[in-house]
Image (cartoon, rainbow, N blue to C red; front, side, top):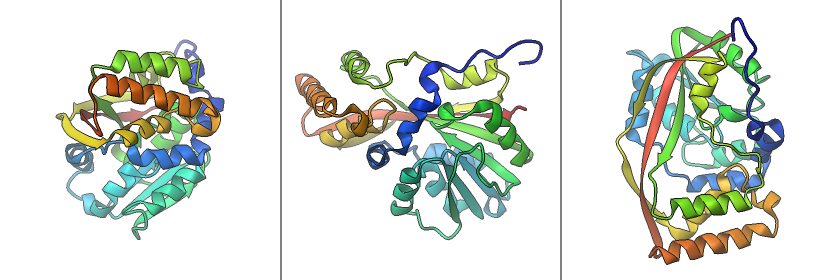
Length: 267
């Protein structure tokens, strides 16, 4: 930051942990995450202005394209970039993944070919793993004048078992360097991002089979089945037992909202 030295990036967001997103098992588990919701989509489209249908959007670290696939029907082009080939392949196979105006790029954001200017850039739970010193200037350079970068995060309501699950996660995660970290304030403090607006959607009830709810954990960093090895089924059994002790049957119902914070990436 101007006049000083930036705080180092937290160890648990380092490239060795970011490499886990290359694992095919994690890409397959992504389908079990809850959707971002219609209200979040409406907010993102409102950031495009009146000529949304004739604009281009950049999805930064698109994963399996939950945002890219939802935005593509409403704009001229979406460029979806992710360093993980497994994520790109999984995204192409999902509904909307073969849209003619959706371009997939299996490449790191630090070096991917970008075709701006973009009227909006979005990122859903992905910027954590990138080289911020390189990526934020790149995003700033490819945005159209006045365009913003929106960071979008799912927020699952607390459950009666949340504290017990957190203890299980701490015991079994392969990312033992994890510390709580709020991404956007951390980016602001380091001079990478200036927030100009924010919105949290109303909670929406979401129901999924209990086994899908358990499988969704394996889409989180530190829970790649390939890297957990024999600990993966042990964790699943412990989590299943926890849910059943709390009276959860074949399905799990919970509230999920989406938090959006947008603004200007900084050089």
